[in-house]
Image (cartoon, rainbow, N blue to C red; front, side, top):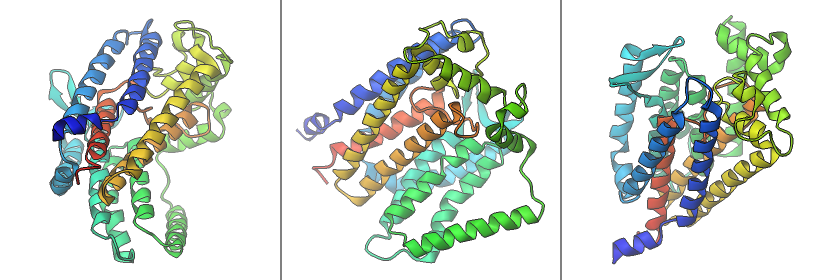
Length: 366
């Protein structure tokens, strides 16, 4: 009876919304890669999505309290995995982000660390409930997120490292950080940034190029500014209704860089116009609102922390990716959840949603 009751409480409305978004993903990847060497990636995306949904149902059956119990071990393993990436990881375009498992399979630990951080931060602040947040507590929280962030930055992978930050911010906010503590932290960040600048520590050339391209894409239209320029052209040329599937001049003409991953929203806007972009953004809004509703009905504090941590990461990724393709954010390589091609990103999102389902299903039994 308990299992039946649990499945009755499964969030089928949320599943319907993410299924619709998944269909959009497959169709857009198929269109964006139809005339390129990446043709067939839509078939792989279908496999990723099916595997993700299967994992979501499996994870929904695992009591999230059990995950909280074992997350310290998972955190330790994650740190070891990130160190292993630096030691034996596969180097692609100057960065070591993957471990080659053989048979064409590559494992990206940094993507899974997001989930581990969400759980470890929830556990950490759960243990601090009913007392004021002290400076040592804040320092420990920074250390929890700062160690994996530093390791990912060293790969280098600025985009993924940045996705860890909203987990920390959300944890501090829900943990009860005081306004004066926020003010001190902001002042400290400004001072440290100034000291780093005065000491002569500069950004790496590729990082400086991305910032320059963001501030003035026309300064190097065929170099660092190329991606942003082509993305903005694609979005603008879509107009209200779009040019239609397989008819995007920037996408099908191979002007838009990697239109099936980082710039998939630009490809969608070119082919389906402002209307198509609004529909996708509306789907994201409904998914996020559904997640927040589940957080509000969670039976305990860690359940709320976990779901809101997932919400924070998703909002950050959506805002940065969409902002990037319209020129409001620098190019960072952050994928659009459930829309961009990629096994690690898709599986992470579905496993995270599986935990949300588990929390929802247990809201009456804890």
